[in-house]
Image (cartoon, rainbow, N blue to C red; front, side):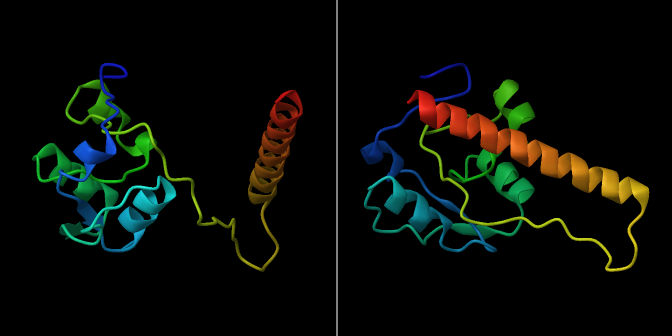
Length: 134
């Protein structure tokens, strides 16, 4: 056990557990196992659910383990309804885009865009500093 709501199961233990699949990301378990060099003969098997919230409910009902962003299940982790089975993570390979109308944007939207750009710049600067220290 890592902490009150986190374990670090071995690859042998992980492949014994049933998988909960996300219908919108049908290859996510395969990607996760491949990233961590774990062979799972049934990485595409398991109950399928469309939403992270549905996966969380299924996991709480002991139907299997799911890949869910931790930020979406923090309450369930803290009240011990769910636990993290492995400390291994899947780094995001998907991009998110800030989009808005092509018409003239409001000052509020422009303020939000400016803030996002500033946060990204700060994030990149912090990452560069970490790389220099390493």
